[in-house]
Amino acid sequence: WGVYQNELPDEQLIHNLENYIGQSINNKTINKWLKEGIFPMPLLRVISLSSKNPDITLSNLIVNINWFKDNGIGVKVKLPVTRDELLSSKNIYFYGYLLGDGCISKNIIKLADGHKDKTKVYYSKELMETFQKYLHSYFHVNSTITKVGNCFHLVLCSKLLTRYLKFFYGYDKDKEIIKIPLLINNDPKNIATFLRGYFDADAGIHDFSNSIILKSKDSNFLNSCKDFLENQGLSLEKVRLDSKRVSYITISSTELMGYANVIGFNHPRKRLV
Image (tube, rainbow, N blue to C red):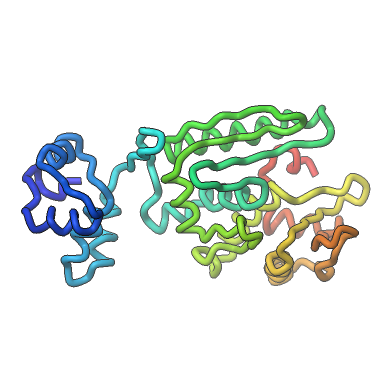
């Protein structure tokens, strides 16, 4: 990053860093940082805290990072660090899908898709392969795809990426809370992209009525979806409960054209509707 222009940091800065992380640092370690061009993130924070505007200084340092090293898997990971990158349509769509039919644990991200009809499962494989290519090209992370029954699962390990997604997009699914990220909450175009990912993952299509049904344990989220769609000109009935007391909304066949114009599907199988 050229923070020190190939010179050793002064002793006071190193002392401050040692206090910040709670351990000693020797010159051999510092020389390794300079030689490899890899520096610990706490160092940037310590530098920023010594300035008049710590947050601005930290932001200016972070935008000059070329890549991050994920110590958990020992590989370089590329993470979006500017607002424009965070708000790219591919990132927003991916996060929407992740909330719908995926999960994040401490260091694992998992996506899934399948269908009860075995003849249509290949669409799920195609979708998981699309996500796999996206994750590799955009974040430089590898993932594996496996077939489990009539489903395909995509799994990747990266503690760095899981923490990143949770922090910037406000992931609360483990608390059974689904919400539109605050980062995009005032932009209808980005909300539509997010919901396209979510509907691709979780929305069902009724075989006979050709209506779209979205279920969720979080009725507040469904009301948010309903309000957004109605603000875009669609007409929906109120949120209802099924026989298992799970809330759902229905987009009738007469509203499909409106749905297609506002949100639509990227899922290769659902695009056929």
